[in-house]
Amino acid sequence: MEPFERYRPIIDDFDAFLAACERPLGNAARINTIKGSVERTLEALDEEGVAYEQADWNPRVVRLETDSPGSTWTSFHGLTHGQEEVSAVPPVVLDPQPGERVWDSCAAPGGKATQLAALMDDRGTVVANDNNLGRISALRFNAERLGATSLAVTNADARTYSLKRFPFDEFDRALVDAPCSCEGTIRKNPDALDNWNEGHISSVSGIQKGILRRAVQATREGGTVVYSTCTFAPEENEAVVQHALENEACRVVDFDLGLKHSSGLSEWDDETFDDSLERAARIYPHQNDTGGFFVAKLEVTAE
Amino acid sequence: MSDNDGQRFDRLPETDTERTVEGRASRKEVIDYFEDRFGIPPETFADYTFWEKGAGKIWIYAGEAPTPIEIEAIGMTCLRTRQEHWKPTTDFVQRFGQFATDCVIELEREQARAFAAGEDQDLEWWDGDWGYLIAAHELAGDLEPLGIGLYVHGELRSMVPKGRQRDI
Image 1: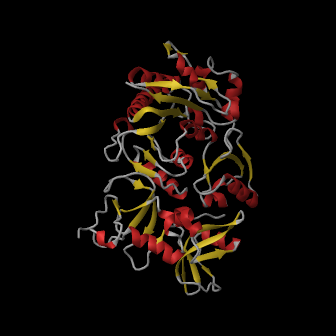
Image 2 (image 1 turned 30 degrees about the vertical axis):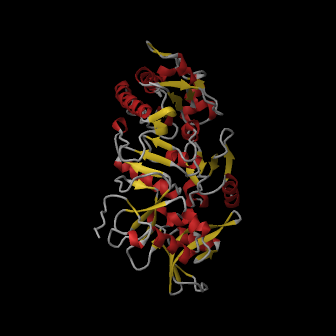
Image 3 (image 1 turned 90 degrees about the vertical axis):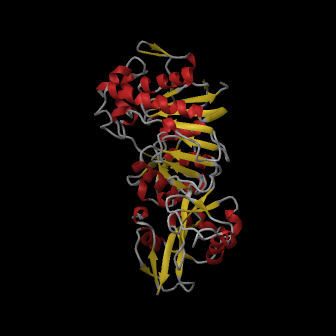
């Protein structure tokens, strides 16, 4: 937990934050509405005797009281998908509509890409990309298990992504759920901080900036880009969005979020960020008993 | 007629007369198969396109794409053609099997468990067709498809792929 000391000045009730990080996380799942309605899936869970609690902020997210969430009928049928509660936030903020063209730039293993498809009633085009061919097999497995027919899976570097292979030249929306230092997953992966160092944060933030810039470029004017990470480091969050604001035509916009959260930062170390970064959301583990997450919503503007 | 290129996705021709690749199924043949074998209404697939990649592997897709296209996946695999008996995939059956009226074998809970675990079982009471069947069981008040089984000589063989098998 030593690396988290740097966040003491920015996190309210820092001791509660540290205590939450020490506690293991329960099993959460997303109800996959491509395969069945929320009501029917809840009925199936009842029938099986699997206890659950629906999330207040999202009726499609349930906290399951079982030690083997993968060995239930609802999981076998693809009616539920094991997915951390906060990881279901970015697709909801992106708010894709049926029939749209949507890019998930870093899509493997596919929890969010299939959630985007479900939010679109599985109609439209979700281009699910990942640069890691090994992780694409997990993405494909999940997409098929969940019955997502609107996914087109590509294997490319998101920073230089080309739309030439598709019959359209821009997306309506894009999700950049960026590779990151994963500090916020400490409750699921107790060794998440083992290789932590500022050098790593600095190098991964360069990649994040490249992906977010490409996402803004590839999205139509008036379209939406959501940037998210499962980490607390401002270098990977506000600083990345700030970089996009300075170099691409976009602005940070407000969004509603039914989970407790803190505002994005307007300064960190010696760096100041645009005031609009306060519209971003920082979700800390002690606020809702979840993992940690950062989400910012951008609108693509005229050049 | 040209040969099938296994490295890319090609959209299926509408009918046999528009076929340019040797041995490739047409969209009509695929939709007819699902209707003839399982009673799935053709209009179920009105908003989907069908694609072939690899020899005989058919994919069903709801999005936009040009043909041909070289990407990792397009929608989901639905059917294996280019063999005597066409074989739907378990994932397709779980997604579209609720529209089937024929060749659906309804299993009791224990039989469904064995099926999901990938086990073969003797089910001599079945008096319908032999061959590929949709196995289903009752879940939350409705029949829910489990996957594809092969029924021969009084035995139902689970075709649930290894990675999808579960002990429930």
